[in-house]
Image (tube, rainbow, N blue to C red):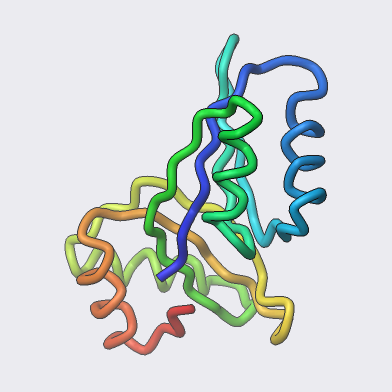
Length: 134
């Protein structure tokens, strides 16, 4: 199970670079991220090398952060693999709240990062269906 760092940030020029600068200073590597914005604020979701350390550093700089359990599934880079995974989840009556991509730097394969309710049960379910959970 992966820990995702969610950062609530004002939607203003330079803010993303300020966040990445803090993470660089702390030697925290960003493995994957997605940003959802609105007119004034946004949510930056990241999977990072050291989520607790990243959260502490960002909170010390005034950012509101939260850690959330997410699932990472390593897949072959082939047409239709995302559809197969989503089909397996749907067949098991599992709702996916959101999705984004990362990749495994060691294997070079894509990693689908997603959030669903009952993470532990979902992780067991998809591993039983033959998917590689990271």
